[in-house]
Amino acid sequence: MVNAFLKPVDKHVVAESTNLVATNYGRHIFNVKASEDIDNGKLVNIDAMKYEKNEYCTMVEPTATSRVGLILSVAVGADEKPLAATYEYNFYNGKDEIMRVYELAAGDKFSVSVNGIPDGEVGKFVVADGYDLAVADSAPTDKAFYGEIIEVVKRTGGNFFKVLVRKNG
Image: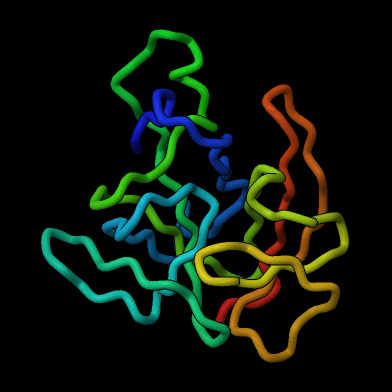
């Protein structure tokens, strides 16, 4: 990941693998080359990715019919000073970097900082809107992927929406 401390941007999205089956067994973790600067907590179309070389794939934007993977790279930076350089919201996946993408399965749970789901609230559903998570009022019947916001988790570093994956594929 790139340390964005010196880049004048809003806080980046922070994501957590709260309970993903891909972290233990049964699903894939992909190495994907970022085609643009992109935050953790965004989505990638895992069905349309193309193998490149050296165990990494191309980044492809999701559509309504895509199975998706969650971008969730480890926040690593060369700088430890000033202290703000270590805050995770100052990190993003830079263009041409290899990032980690977790294949999502029904029943998985992950958390995304509230700036990653504008207008989100408990009981609402989320769908893929390009690389982003967008809010839907009801469970969609025409989407390959959707999840439900089941909780707001309050932390010292900010608030997070916990998402339960209801369908992916």
